[in-house]
Every structure is written in structure tokens, then in C-alpha cells.
Image (cartoon, rainbow, N blue to C red; front, side):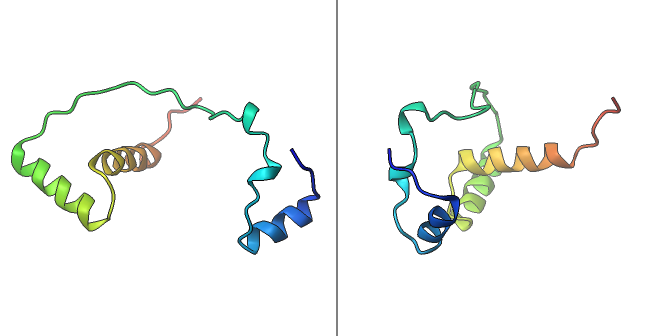
Length: 81
């Protein structure tokens, strides 16, 4: 793995250069990336509307539902500590 300064890295990145050689991919990990499969039942009409909206946004049904849930949870009032 090569090393460079943050300024050099930023310039390369901003110029669209491949900066992957500066990452330690052997130790890369995703933070908070645990998943659990859930099942969702919808009427066919709603599923068709969901698929149409996903197509309009050029995304998948799965990503759209995940995005909507994430947005709604971020809007929800947070409980007092």
C-alpha cells in the first residue's frame, strides 16, 4: 500500500484519478452493517405502485423501501434521555 499526504490524495481524487492503491483493503470493513431479513406483505396494487416509483427513480424496490424507512425513522421524534 502506497502512502501520500492528504492534500495529494484530495487532488488525485478531485481530478478523478484512481486512489484505490492508497487504501488498506485487507483491513477494510463496514461499520454497522448487520442485516436481518424481514418480510412485507402488500396488496398487489400497492406493490405495482411501489415498483412504478422505483422504476421512475431508477432504483430497486428493495433500495426504495430501505430509503423510505430510513427517512421516516430520521424524522421520528427522538426519546428524551
